[in-house]
Length: 105
Image (cartoon, rainbow, N blue to C red; front, side, top):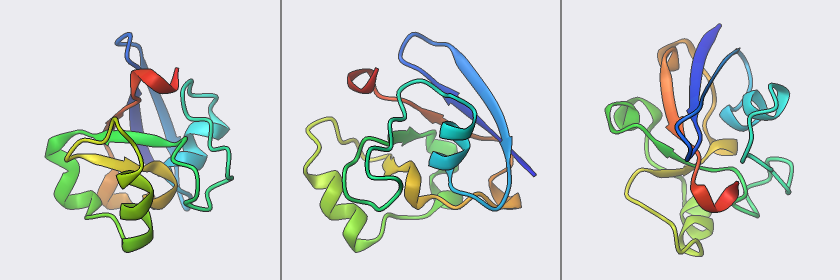
């Protein structure tokens, strides 16, 4: 079981616990605002975009090719942008912090 903290643009923290799922599913299952996941986790809409806290970038790893393509279409992309549907929760991500972009709220 890993804890993931989602911080919305207004500074509200939403701490959830999950395992054997994606960061996106953890957000959806716990009603975290701003993670719409319109495509259901198929890496085809970018409505689950998050900014990974810089200290977690190495543990999360880089985006794959398909994810890169989706992120490139997003004008709010930053160096630490990821699609939460593409981040698998593992024990190594216990304590992960991500920020939800303002434009998704």
